[in-house]
Length: 409
Image (cartoon, rainbow, N blue to C red; front, side):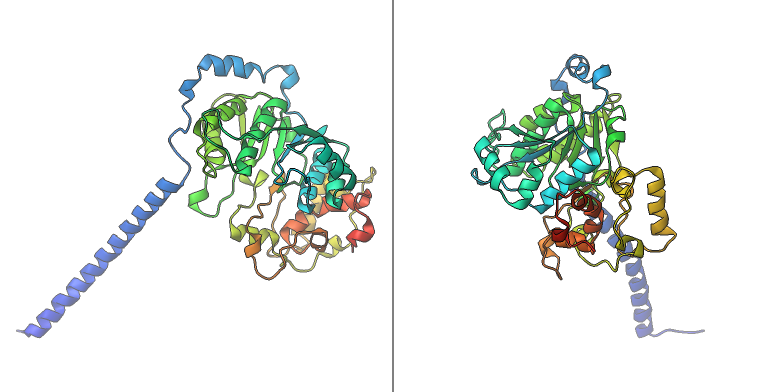
């Protein structure tokens, strides 16, 4: 009969406890991790409780009075008006930079709108001075034939008396007013059209909104408020404006992204009121720095041989890439996929209507001077540059930008 010493017994017991504790520690660790994830998601994700009580508005008011504003044969299509909001920090200077030109000119080319409204608090004399003697990009924007100014007074407080101090919050209220009054397409100045949104305008919905890409759970599930399509006086825009005055608290996203997301997901129950499109339609990249690096960092390799030459034109003199017909799209996809010309870091915007190019964090990207200018776009070394290049080529082709200045290869 084998006997064990007290030392061996203690060792065996210790080994048993170690194995048992190892199993328990794994279970405890997993439980703690799960709890932390749950708490993080609960505190940070899209609100599940309504931010605005729709019970304050009667069903008759919503379904009869408001809905009647957007029904009828004459208003089934979202108007082809483009809206920008531009408030002045210095009331004596109206200045638009190159990136604003890229956005506005791309809207001019792809959307072919009836009007491009600039809702601004600039005085007529300041605007006239900018048109006549402003810097080159300001003058080029203001020379576009569709440009129309709408003078606005930026709000300073909500109907409940809460002060509105930040420029971005003032613009939040003004964008809703613009769409509620005129209808059309609202675009932030850092959002760049890449194709015509006519199919969305004719989709039969009173409003069209898009989801927002997020790299973390904390920011997932929200609606992007930088690109919005709406008929005049829609239920969503009327309620959003009322609710904004009710819930605005001075925080960055409460009355804009958070409230809009809450209303969109609930009012989407109303037939034909809201079409929610995939995040890649309007915001294929997020505002987080890793995504901005992917979009703006000039790290792409040499251009494919096909892209080195000047773009092929169609019978109207427009670049085929701008026309976006089915044969053009198939030729583009064939060149990218079968030809093997795609850089491994190159992003595909084939399903993107508007590229919301958040750029607040690009100064954190190392290895370049952070200048997004004409030279940067023409070089086509970044995903942003390659995406917006066709519109810039069009501006050169039509003489808006002198070819010598662009130095096209």
